[in-house]
Length: 267
Image (cartoon, rainbow, N blue to C red; front, side, top):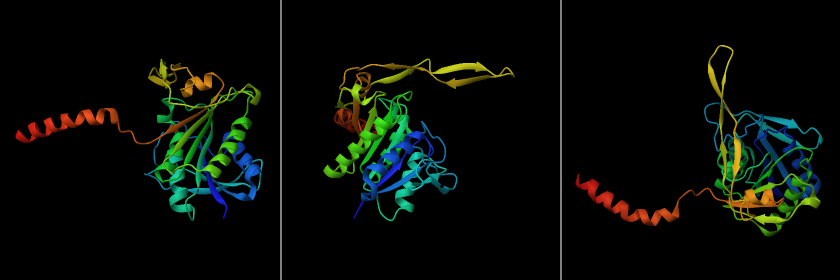
């Protein structure tokens, strides 16, 4: 029985990244893999793990631009909602793998908190499906081909060697040609912040408004971190989990909790 791969993104189903990836997956695996493509009907970048709750979800079948054999589902919902809808309502059984991407732009460091791309993959993990998020850190003259090639190669490895259902791998690919790559690194999340985040402007009626912008500030530039790996033209693979518990603080708070409990109950 062939395996099923669910492909999604946050840039929208007509975005170049998901189109190129789906085509490459189709060429690579053919009938050996059942490709299911479901994505938002318009761009949903930086929506995080929002779920569409206050309006009905509508699903439309769309033809892919460069391959009429490929069909996809366009949904008027968030990336995470697309995955949840596919798994819990549209598909007869769970897919074997969720692949979210290829995102236009990086998902490094603290970006993963805001990322719709990573959140779609994380929804797969919540539903006990191993998942991968893939991003091309810059899109200029370099297209999505290398990132798509690596994704297919990596997916083949995962299908042959396995990936646990609770595991999410966040992959970032630098904007270089194959010959310029300096390798593949397993990385930690780096520190990526923004300064001068808001630009204050005035509209023609004299009312102030703010435009979210900002300059990127990156530290931890060695290749043990995702930011540093990309700076050194390496593909970065970062394992991510949704358990946000701070275990370092957990034990030290136990004594505090006992003191709070006894003093509170005595009042």
